[in-house]
Amino acid sequence: MARWDEIELLQLQYAIAVYDQQGFNNAAAYLGIDQGFLSRQIKLLEKRLEFNIFQRRARPLQLTNAGSEFLQAARQIINQFKQTVELGQRLNRAEKEQLNIGINTSIANSILPDILRAFREQFPTVELMLYEMASYDQIEKLQHQQIDLGFFHLHNLNNINNNNDNDVLTSKLILQERLVIVLPKNHRFAERISIKLEELRNEQFILPPDHLLHNLREQINSLCANAGFQPRVRQEAAWISTVLSLVAGGMGISLLPANVTNLQRSGVFYCEIQEQSPVLEIVAVWRNDHVSVILENFLDVIENIVEIS
Image (cartoon, rainbow, N blue to C red; front, side):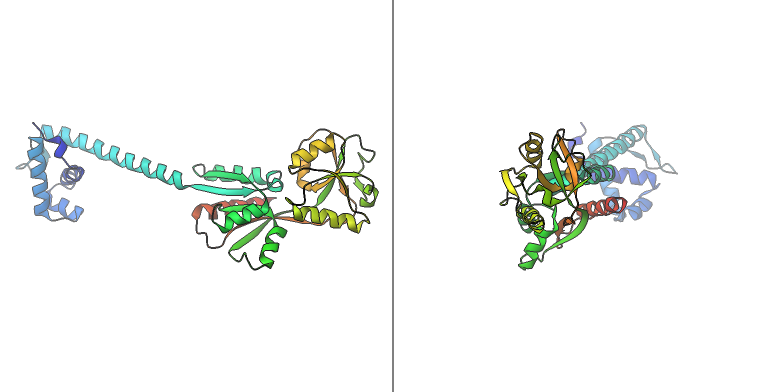
């Protein structure tokens, strides 16, 4: 009875090579092994199979009937094994092909969908893990290599750099936006193209909390101060969607980054500020010591999208 469980994969490859190269000498040279070793391996294989693969006296080299069937099956086994290995390698790469990205509301409401769509079209096997978090959380996770890339406002990164604590991080400008006025739909100023900030001095404001979005609140306060007043804050809300809902409900007005105009929220009206509004710069940030082909590909996609935008 053939000892098939003792047959090695290499022996199948040796037998295929002997036939394809038409002889032991040619096959040994092709395989880069000793001819005597190759002959012994084929004899051992035939012993385990209990039949001859080759007609030794035939010239050119020919297969026995059993050998012909065997080599056909051997080729299928080798091909199937290669396909299985390649599949395993692809699955292994897929497990590693993951990019962890921190995002904020501004990028999510603006060009992030375009970036994600373009990247997935080019690199469909890469898994993108998105985490919505505040700028300081993104910076901390970048420093500890817990995310690969972050999107947030440049002034947050500058504050860290000014303290000389963030030399490892590098950035790329993604977009610039100004603040807009958000009014309830039935507000007396609704439908106006622009409004002077000084006209809002008596309004009730719905604003993001200072402890979560300090730099945004600081810019809003500074802008209002230049107009001669400090905003009268009736309510704070951490999520932009909540701010819009409260404005729509008539609880007050707000000043928010211009990306909110992309949100189809009923009950609110967006209006330009007549005064020069500060420019908010959104950047992509990553570690300059992070070597990753996936990250480089993602940055290339970002660059292309920014150029088009």
